[in-house]
Image (tube, rainbow, N blue to C red; front, side, top):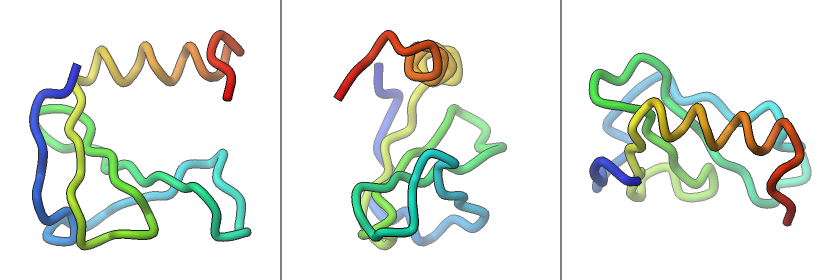
Length: 73
């Protein structure tokens, strides 16, 4: 569930690229740790665009499912 949307994600500092993202310039996401209301996620190709802020528990469940192989492309 999405908690909210940040319209200009570039206004925040400290974004990090997913460790699963390669250097080929393809589909990459970035996350921001330490945000007070959840986990902001943005498209690394559009850093000035919006970011979705997921509830921390929802984001943790998603990451766990990906790591465990429960979600496929």
